[in-house]
Length: 198
Image (tube, rainbow, N blue to C red; front, side):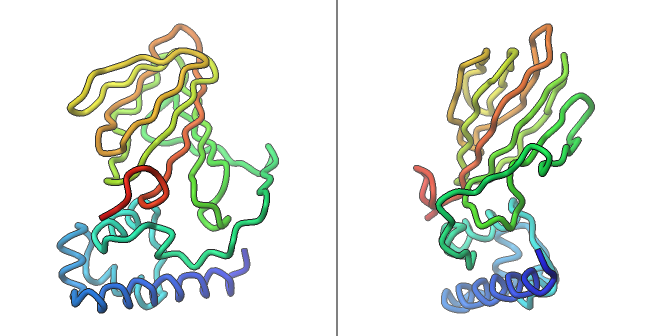
């Protein structure tokens, strides 16, 4: 993506955030307090001078009572988005033995966030990021993955099994098998899944 396109998207997002905030009679301090983000950071975002991560944007969307799509100036999606194997990059996150391959970037104009995860034997993701209103779908391609849920029953998925998980109830994930595991995660932001942001 060209820098000019990114600058335009940041400016448009900032304008949308400011319009929604002022329409609701909220100050930057109100939003900062309700989202655990700093007023100075939110000001930079509103002025198109800083990017914002998807997780932080989910928090702002939830606080403002809108879906993520309401904040983004996304063109209508193409009929199909093709991502070739060589276009994905491996991202090592949250500990050894876990590799994540985001399928699309933040700026590909798609609403879902699919990720291919590979877990070495014993790999452990201590804490799935909790974002209220977000839903996750997981499909285990190979291996055995165990989930310890916050305030819920633990469960294990083997190859071919799948599950829907509310992000606010997600906990930790561990490869409990004796071989590497691979899973496909698809996250859906507020307003696009069954949990409409209020």
